[in-house]
Image (cartoon, rainbow, N blue to C red; front, side, top):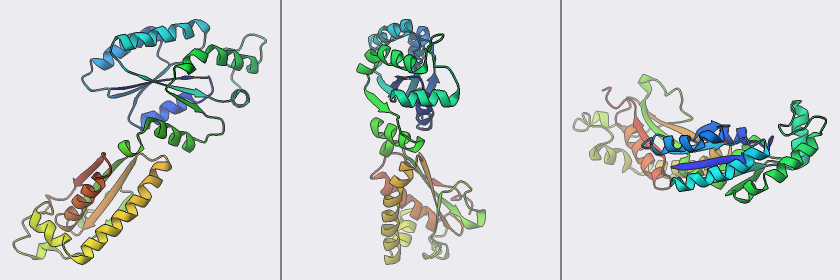
Length: 284
């Protein structure tokens, strides 16, 4: 199980980081009381795989809670739960500007005190936590897209977690409404008109060979593969976590199935999270 502790300065983007991690299939909990940290960890460990990726935001506001955090984290190691710490920070001027823009008081701001003083006091208090952090992200000047990219880079999840679905469909049953990319393979010879192939599907070797062995099919697969290798990383850089590729023929049973299955196989050679689906394969 992956267990990530998100800590850091107030106003540095901890909650925003949690939102990004949630899109990356983490189960996120924001501002769990430290007294419940051990029980929550026990629940995750006993869940039999239900919580495989967990991110927990700790909102440390007082000196007492800061001193409680480190012993609480030590107890997680004693329980056999390995974790990593992501520490969020920004320069003092940026934090002050963000709080002035939001018109909210800093959580450590004392009566009559300034935001600047509160930020510097928090920064000093959090120094022991920062020293133990596995990752540190300074959000000064970062856009949301840049923060997404930085988090994925640090956690080494881009290639592993970018989910690709390749769906074969029949045009006579309509396009998949959630498809990002659609490719029409009705230009390929149709096995439907070969009597011994008609009862079979594109998952059968005879049909697959009939569709894919032709020079035009081989060239199409090569060019399509090159196109996808170019654009998939660009989708990921824009903050996308999924890509739905649809491949269509007339009925969705022969040509599209053979091409989609082969395309998914090729993509799987470089990525782990690739799924093939055959929406209309049993519709005749």
